Image (cartoon, rainbow, N blue to C red; front, side, top):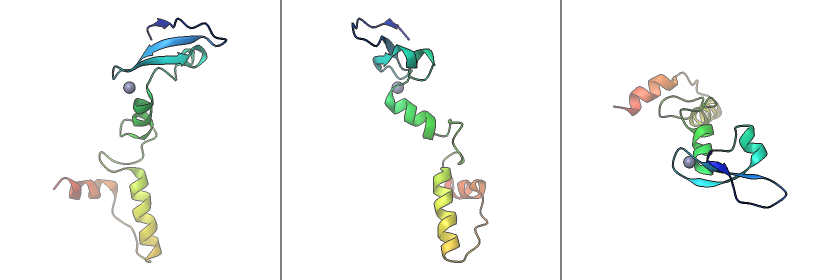
Length: 93
Ligand SMILES: [Zn+2]
């Protein structure tokens, strides 16, 4: 967060700077709650990437991907027994 933006609107805006260098304006209320200092790209990365607390996958593979495989295995009446770790071992070979 850099400081108040020179805006004269109903809502107060803050100028924010994201870790990645992006600068933009966010509503002051959002900034105060600590949720909007990130730019859109980084927010997506934070909620979908491996560093996110919502990330259910492994180091490379997303939980979504695993779910997809599991569903298709079920569809073909196959047991899905491979774990994310096994898959990733395959992946890195
Ligand atoms: Zn960013």
